[in-house]
Length: 291
Image (cartoon, rainbow, N blue to C red; front, top):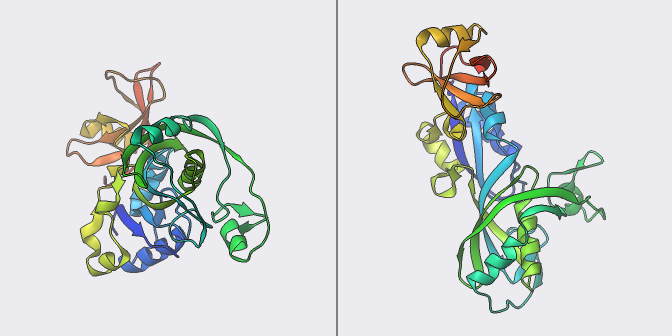
């Protein structure tokens, strides 16, 4: 059994769960899960965790998300991305990169967002995208989301790329839809090019994974590099594996901090929480063999 993360380029037309099914067959194992979700009609980066690495999903799949996404102005589709049916075209005003940056700034902070009807949100037990495909008339409730940071990376007058850090549950496609309207035209997403540390340039297609599956397995701790690191002795690791706290002190630690714990051989031994009052590490999730 492998224990690591696979950066998958999810194709359009497949649900995230469908991708997991394909990888279970390719790798011959059941224990797999994905961080975040891409709706069936959306293409882009989908990190898949395998083996014991699935226990790290909650740390890599936090309440704050970071993405890179490409957008095209002057074109709107029913799915709000380039895989859908065109429902509107509009002239694109003469816009500079500074114009786009100014509008993007207006989306930062706490905002209300109407999710795409072609999303995986449940409506009376049925996925919204299934109802949309059947032309069922329904309305999704507006969501309150937070855009922590929104930066323009490139713009050529009609197409661009931005980086967004946002709360869990934010729909980047819908953000692009609203951006187009604010710019005096319409817009759709072309592809999600990055999810956290996972980029589209390094993502593998299902065909590539079929040919050489082991070539694309990344270390299990790749998605938790933002957690503080604790280097522990073999004795400390042994105690933590037994469920026992160990003395620990270090700079810039606050009570309740979540840390990734490494043994003397630099294997990831688990996740612990720092008890600032007693200056100890309390084990949270430990790996007997290390990862």
